[in-house]
Amino acid sequence: MRIAHIFSSNFLAGSVMYALQLAEKQIEQGHQVILITDVKVSDAIPIIELPISDRHYPSRFRNIKFLKKLIVEKDIHIIHAHSRAASWVSFFATINTYTALVSTIHGIQGKKSIINNKVYGEKVIAICENVLIQLEVQIQIDKSKLVLIPNGIQFGVVPKKLSDDKIKSAKIISLIGRLNGPKGEIAEKFIGDVFPKLMAQHPSLSVNILGGEIEALSDTGKNKLEELIRQYPSRVNFIGFSKEVKSYIQTSTLIIGAGRVALEGIELKVPVYAVGESNSIGFLTTQNITEAMASNFGDILPEKKEFNIDALSVYEEINHFLSTTNTEQEDLTSFIRQYDVNNVVDKVYDVYKAALIQKIHPKHIPILMYHKVPIKNIDTQHKIFVTKKNFESHLRFFRIRGMKSITFKQYHDFSEGKIAAKLFPSKPIILTFDDGYEDNYTNMLPLTEKYGFKGVLFLLGNFKLTHNNWDKNEDPAANKLMSTEQKAAFVKSGWEIGAHTLTHPHLATINATQAKNEISESKMYIEQTLSISVSTFAYPYGDYNEEVKNITVNAGYKFAVATDSGGMLLHDDRFAIFRVNMFPDENIYSLYKKTSSWYRAYYFKKRGK
Image 1 (spheres, rainbow, N blue to C red):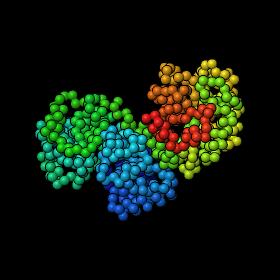
Image 2 (spheres, rainbow, N blue to C red):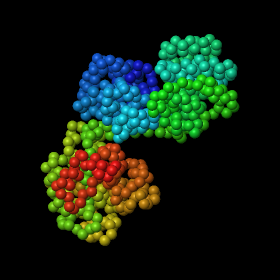
Image 3 (spheres, rainbow, N blue to C red):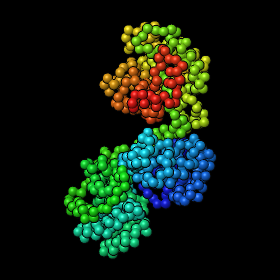
Image 4 (cartoon, rainbow, N blue to C red):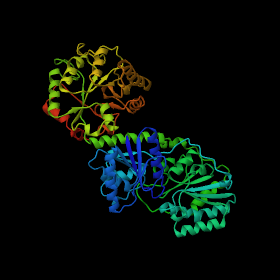
């Protein structure tokens, strides 16, 4: 994909660090990435300097004009905005383009400043649960647009060892974070009301202050810092911005901070006192880690509230900690695996794909489920057939209506930008056929070739099966399955082949080992026998549960189809895709209804969903 990250970098916030790290990982994966921001923040990634932080309308309009031109010249697939100002200009720049906008929201949004919640784009990533709640409840962004993905960090990076002259004491507290805004006010409380008492009580204690320029402090804060340095000149180290933050964390007895600072402390097993601009969590433990993660370790509550840190209580807590012999951090690493940037970058890419296809085609795509196509009506209790004559009338109707068939593979390629968005049909339809009956080859395939349609054929992985033996008391002739050569003819004709288990069981009723074998082995056997790649799966009977769904994901499929499940749109849940069953008695009205973009909403309403 061609991706542009846009953010405000008038100061080096955690959101900037996250955007840089995400961009670096995406480049490693082969994507083309550029950064658009106020000032140059990286030597490793192409950067275009643009005054994103300048919210004056003349500047914004110039930014929009520049971005519109860039989108065309670079054929950008995704713009990923990381600040409100970035989302605003990106939204207007992407109007009347096929470029999708994704916004990551790093904090609580001021409702009055939002012109329209559409400015956040096709998909909106919330970095923690409290942001997600605010976006849905107060900003009223459609729930289907929202995704919870935390800002990632790179695990396993060994910090550079600090020189001895930077390690001042046996006990070190490192206060890490910005020194402007609410965080600056909190830092002033520590500098003026907490650290002097702690340093007087503990002669071996020194303090590091990292993460911001001294000019960002208020005059009162500067005076407090100067007084602290005057009292303890060799024990107070104002470091400011540093690329060695993890190194300072590793040598600390205790770190104070929020967001990625807390995460890096947990990873390095250094005790963390989590306090952010919205809340004080205190020392992180197994009891409060979930609450801490929901607030990005103290930075974010679902709505803004007045927050004044209780300096006396903080002093007492930290003093008690420093006075005890056991100062090791509880091992909380199992709680933060979801923050691994390698997992985060994959989740973000899934959001990109959903956003791009949403921009290309924001409507419901009808996905029809067929089975048998016999010459004449057959005696069956399941009614899973459409006669050859009726099926031809279906195809004529689709063609008259201007519909064009696509496959799931094509849909996936569009979502990754591998096929130009302008080639996506205005009235797409996906035709699916389950089980692989012989009449699909003799009756259905010639008709689809005649009318110019292709589809997806879901086959059982056990090619030794010659008949449907899972539906009892059915006509053996109608239940005959295709030969290997007949299945290969569909491949040659350009059809997508999907898997449908080995033996057609109810997956939700068998044990996990059996289900894994049915799902994984069917994929492997079809791929080996037909020399193709299989990326789509059909649950027999539309029957699955969360365990079966997870097995399907882990087996390497990209899509899984069911029947009455999934969201309003296909990409809302790619492993519970809604299909419409086609019956022998379909008429013009039912065909029109089942192939209309409004049908999914009608279906939801009819069933009270």
